[in-house]
Image 1 (cartoon, rainbow, N blue to C red):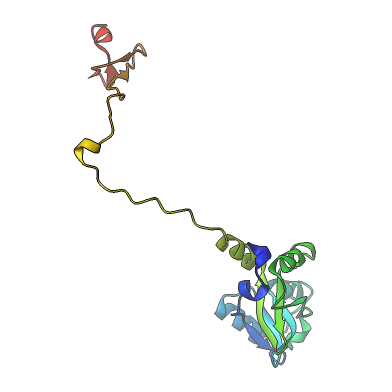
Image 2: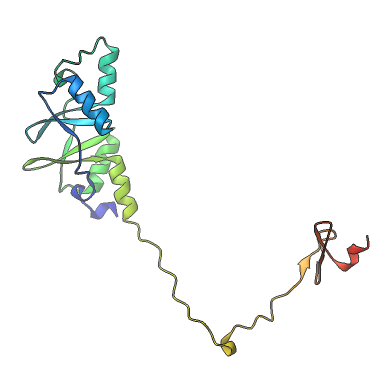
Length: 182
C-alpha cells in the first residue's frame, strides 16, 4: 500500500518548467500550449517558484497584467518541497494537512518531479491487488455431468401467482391452465 512506497515511486517526473527570466506572456503561452494549470519556475534545476492559473487570475483581478512583466511579479514562492526518498504516506499527510496542491520533489541535484494528490491516489489504487483469476474449467464427460433433477420447469403464473408447470403465453402474460379460461 502507500505506507510501503516512497515519493519517487509515485511522483510525476514530467512537469512544465519555465525560466525565472521569462515574461508573463511567455508563461501564459507555455501553459496554454502545453495545456497545464501550473508551471515550475526554475533557476537552473532549482525551483524558485510556481505559477498557477490562480496566480495569473489573482494578478489579472488586481489591475492590468502586463504581459511584458517578469514572471517573478506573479509567481508564488516555490512552495513546499520534499525529498524523493520520503515515505509516500508522509507526503500524503503533508498534502492534506498543509492544504497544498503539489509538492516539489527534489534530490541532491535539484528538482526531479512533482507530487500531487492525484499521484498519491493513483499509487494507492495501483497497489490494490487484482482479483484472483477464475480457475480454468475442463469439459466433463457425460457420466460426470451434475445431476440436474433438482431443477424444476415450473414458473409463476402472472395472473394468480401460483407456481405451476406448463405456462402458456396469453395476451403477453405467462398463464397457468386454470387461469387460461378466465
